[in-house]
Amino acid sequence: MKQLLLLRFSAMGDVALLAPVIQAFTQRYPDTGITLVTRQKFAVFFEQFPNVQVVGADFDGRHNGLKGVVRLFNELRLMASFDVVIDAHQNLRSSALKSLFRLVGVPSFTINKGRAEKKALTKKENKVRRPLLHSVERYARVFDAAGFPLRPAKPFQFPPFTSVEDELAEFLNRQSITTDTPWLGIAPFAQHAQKMWPFDQVAPLLAHLYANPSPAIFLFGGGAAEISQLEVVQKQFPQAILVAGQLSLAAELSLISRLAGMLCMDSGNMHLAALSNVPVLSIWGATHPDAGFGPWGQGEKAILQISTDILTCRPCSVFGNKPCWRGDLACLNDISAEAVAERVQQMLGENFTDN
Image 1 (cartoon, rainbow, N blue to C red):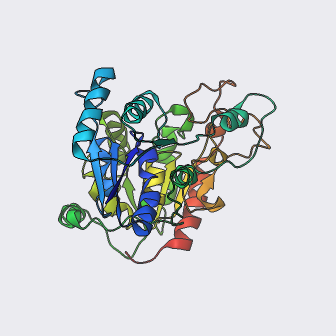
Image 2 (cartoon, rainbow, N blue to C red; image 1 turned 60 degrees about the vertical axis):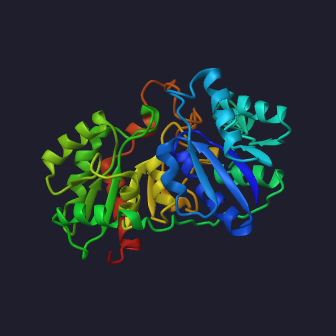
């Protein structure tokens, strides 16, 4: 069996977006195995696919620094004789690994991230506005360059996570919910503030949504700071169900697959919901779906944003990690709770089916 080494270390959403590509690969090339090097916690995204082995890189420990990368290279060489390396990350670590493999005769192919196009889209003046390739399509293109043309499913749905059925059932049995009302997920956080709708709008939003008829609302997040903020909201609305910190990632994915819709930011949770084939309503601020990071397989209904005709400064960043040059984050602050509630209700009305 031929062996392909695939590199994508982070972030969560970017790694998850490999799933449609890897699924298409395993279906078209059943005689070729994939070894994916990423963070161990992301292995759950690929555990259902045949001939896929995930190697958990420990870049905070044994694989840290140049010596750590060399150690990882030696460990990988002991695992298999690779025919090709596909770099779906394109950073210093992946470049170092590729160089080491080239020294032993293994060819490599590298993703084109379209950095120049993205810079043109987000510059302060004279932006070049056009929809760029989606990340999934960029992944597919580097596989094509390596001699493995494929077509990722669109939309895509993770295979069922059967190993966590008992964990999820136990969690749901502790909640006072029914299946005769739509289940809505709300994931109000993102990696950067420039991608996050003001958190103080979440309580007014819930007040709108809990008017009759009301959905069952699940609150998603991660880490102590986010959980603390969600707990404050839950004290105001005790009927809201706190998911953050309660379930394994696989069980969260299984729960997401049962939702009638997910309200989220431009975030990892947006990608997880879209890849679960769940209708998404994503709020966009400093970033823009045209940069190629929109919810895979979903259209304009999945996007809530202030038009670039109104805020010509948008987008000002590819990843949302640059400060707002206006200083007011109007792209997020000018989106009202009423407007979000209206779009959520439209989404639930169009997509609700009994769980």
